[in-house]
Length: 564
Image (spheres, rainbow, N blue to C red):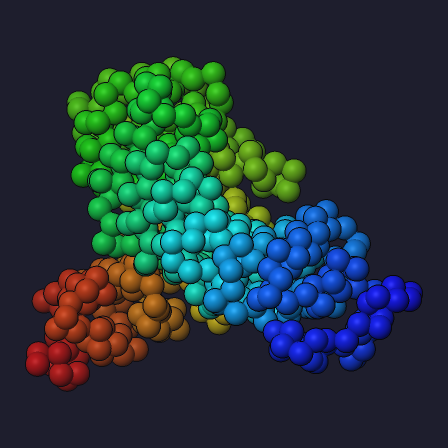
């Protein structure tokens, strides 16, 4: 490769925005492969954005055309680093048109998945955020576009949290510019989907803001928000405890109503996501009654929809309502469940085996079964079809999605039906928990696996079993009881509450009670009792109330300073 004469002989001019250290292509490249820089990029080095902004913008736009192709001319680390280096030299006081074109270049580069980690590692996020000032919607749109692209890849999404980009996106969602608000909510949606850590961060700082955007006048914004909420409400760690669940259910139902009445547009996928979020959010009588009171015949229409996904998710909502509302109040919904064939479809999981080829189908059937376990017909059919015996095989399979849904099924049955719960526990479920939990506590979290989530699922199942199966050998095992005690140190409130409830039940029975005291669980619980309260403290205080049935427990509380 030879430089064109005009470029090869060029010398930086005095006052050329501090670029006297400009090198030729390939110089100082270290161990990186020698690749010629595009001529359009080289021309940027010879133009001052302060004295000749129009020419500089033309050069940026020319390079942007190449970047937008995502082709071989820009698919190189040196080229990207050089472009970012030149853009980073722009002062924040540069003309807004220059800064907009510069941010557009970074946005175009970020479309190429191969370049995203280079952009992040080279400071590209900080650069575009620095070049954007409040009120500059055109520039902010290019910045949000860049961040949304970076959020799409799991290996770059976590950079957004550390560089202040998520704060920028949350703020930008309220913009009156449709393009900016759309890209901002798209960025948040992808950040939530690709990174559980981002999801937790956003839930603590932006869940209420996202909920408010259900009333946005922009279709894309509403759909991005609905998709984000669907993911956030499915995990205890990403569901802000200060969020009013009943209001969330009401807001999502109203959004669907507006769509069916023609007031706003909503895609079938967005409607599926909204119904899924509603079904997940209904977790008690209050949320179920709210859904029942404001659905106003909506579910009848959706349950007979021609779209399979909408029909399926509406059945989930109906089943969730049935779980928490007395049958006589929600009796008009029951025919929808029976006539839809959803119940038999769910029970069909008992005729399947856990193999990779039918993983998705089996997971879906198990997921559908969970909200039906309250129904007497389902409980009877589950026993007649030897469900307690068959379900154990799913617990011990190597398919994560199947195992997770099976744990939810076991927890639901054990919570609602003593006989089924005892059979599942004795059939191997408690032995499974006894083997799995100690191992899970030794693992660390990564992008592919979250042991905290698994531990919570196991502890919920354990909490459901302990009431009717406290005589099981697992609860007479000192090592296992010690593991339960140690989980009290979990950062997840719901996990601590489950363990406290398990220990509370064990304190009510002679042999397990002595073991709970012997392993030091009383002292660990007392440490969690803080004057400021909180869900952990509340769960522990409720557990300690059970010492009235345990003389050893009462003595242990006194010895550990629990009275004070």
